[in-house]
Image (cartoon, rainbow, N blue to C red; front, side):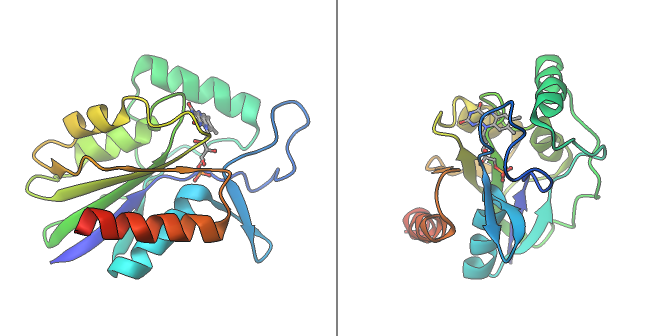
Length: 184
Ligand SMILES: Cc1cc2nc3c(=O)[nH]c(=O)nc-3n(C[C@H](O)[C@H](O)[C@H](O)COP(=O)(O)O)c2cc1C
């Protein structure tokens, strides 16, 4: 039996200093000169601690890094309840026991591709643990909507909601202590 981290993360690789129009970019951390999403950092910690394999949930179409355009596209996707096609096929889940599902909050919801994943992946009989990054607005109803979408999975009701303003070290500590909490 094994563990899987399935996560969505959309760091802004091209514009780490902001575009001058929107708020300063949040949800990215710089490490070794490259930009890594908050969820990506959290997923990496879970991978290491639980010896999990990982699957990155990505829409087939590439999202822009410009926030204004991203805003328009992603608000439209949410309003329509889109289920974007995924770039990579869902991995074989037959021997997976625990799934750690990570996502950034987008418009008080998970990105629509996360629901594409949940509707495509057969998670029945598996334990699902939710971790998310957000800009201090919390998880809204996503624990409920994801619990409903993850048919047949047992969804742990203690999700982790980390702040995108955390440092890498803070994220590491938060994730590790959350893993202990949900495991005990
Ligand atoms: C399109 C978009 C919508 C967002 N909507 C919310 C929101 O509704 N609530 C919130 O707390 N943060 C919101 N955020 C902030 C992200 O959740 C936060 O930056 C997160 O850390 C991004 O994680 P990532 O870098 O791994 O993709 C939004 C960010 C983006 C890009």
